[in-house]
Length: 166
Image (cartoon, rainbow, N blue to C red; front, side, top):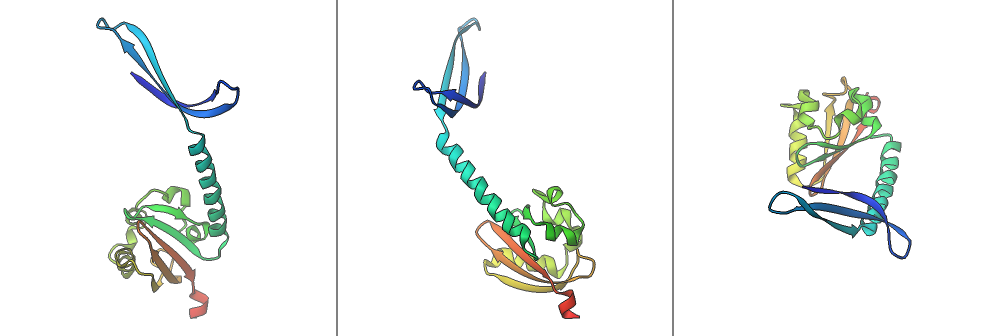
């Protein structure tokens, strides 16, 4: 039986640091415990990188939440990896409920429409694309969509152009 986890431990010089530890029970031929092996690894560097990544994510999130356009990011499996609040205003869905879920399951009304074709073309073309459409999801609102495919992510910025088009 092996048990692993993260702990804060004290170095022999007295300073504390985060460590990943695992312990394993050693049994004899009769199944009796004869020893416990413990390994630990200093993960200070990893923890620092995780903190820096979180700060970067928080800054990017602040920017994406402050823009007036909708912004979504989808992975190559069509799962939502980011949805700003503006996007959810048009769909009446909570972004937290959409994260990690597949686009076609969250919005089945898109399947079989030109919007689905646009998303699929954008994902496979690897070229930025622009699409104008009458909102399938957004109750008849008109949108200009800018799709930016990257290696494993498709980001879509949508601007409501209903007033401008009228």
